[in-house]
Amino acid sequence: MRGSRSGANRGAPPPEEVATVDGITHEGEGVVHSGKTVFVAGALPGERIRFQRGRPHRQHDDGVLLEVLEPSPLREAPRCAHFGVCGGCALQHLAPAAQLSAKQAELEETLTRVGQVSPARWLAPLAGPAWGYRRRARLGAKFVRKKGRVVVGFRERAAPYVAELARCEVLSAPVGNLIAPLALLFDGLSIREQLPQVEVAIADNAVAMVLRVLSAPSEADLGSLRAFGHAHGVRFYLQPGGIHSVAPLDAALPPLRYGLPEFDLTLEFLPTDFIQVNGAVNAALVSRAVELLELDAASQALDLFCGLGNFTLALARRAALAVGVEGEATLIERARANATLNGIGNARFHVVNLSAAPAPEASWLGHDFSHVLLDPPRTGAREVLGAVAALAPRRVLYISCHPGSLARDLGVLVNEHGMVLEAAGVVDMFPHTTHVESIALLSVQPKRARTKPAPA
Image (cartoon, rainbow, N blue to C red):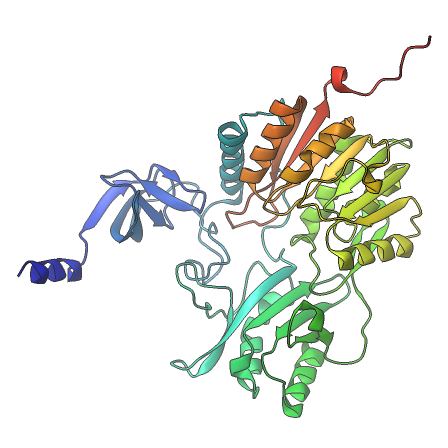
């Protein structure tokens, strides 16, 4: 009997509750402190809402927003019809300026809590277009038997399914308007159930789509892809296996390119290469990085995690020497080719595993570097911090895609190696998402700087 009553209780819907939202999580959910804490997606701080509790967790419950009774003045109508279902965006209901404020607050809190550091000054947020900005994306494709058709989109916010999109407001043109046409194209292919993923790369000179194919497409499939590509200006690539199996659908194509006009640079890349998602913000970020480093004609700059030379080549335009270091050999090949393409002779590149502490005698450390730039992955740059500190450069610029690893690393450089955190600020590379990118500038205290010995 006790088991029966328990089952009946589990089947009853939870009661509706009314409360005021006290804050917002790092994932963009409203926080309600009403008994056990509740995280309510779609709710904003200060709002009076009606909600139901959903899935329980140890420290909080998930909540379902039923109605906003008193909306926040910062609330905006989401532009995307799929907002709330699609997991690509989480903050379209919050005004862009308020999104930046929330990201700034998260960065400040994380630096203080994790790294026990605070900058001498805060940089103005670096922002760009809020819509149609995304030039790199990975979309899911799925033949859904219950619907009898292929759906294309990002993953759903709260479920491991592909959200069925008609269009996307944040993808750059023309891809934002090609979601539904792509679904129709894939639905007509013989391999529609063996095509799980589309990787998009939008260059200045072309649109590339890499199709992950688990079975070989038929001749009819290839014809359909060619016709779609011709009609919509899309280059298709097929990926039957690992990353090195990617090949263009047709004969060799001109390289994909993007430019950094301020530095008279053109960079070539492959459709699966890492490039910054937001082209306009990337250009502004490179400009700010060079400005903050204060390079001169005698500067020697080290760029760690350099990729295909996005920052290194701009540094080379302003310095005597720029050295780029990266663990992926194919990206270093691209970086060297980009240096040649742009007529840059004062850039050097090295393939080095930066997930391990470098040996003091490593050849790439054999320069008197005056400036260092780091742009590591989400895991941060912990393994190279000692080597960076040993160089005693005048300035260090750290570009981060994760506040937690940034705070940890800044804590090491400041609290263990005596550097000074001069400035920090947010970089809005991903508007309408909770993703926080940031930039931090450090300097070496005069007593730690290298000095020439006094004459005898």
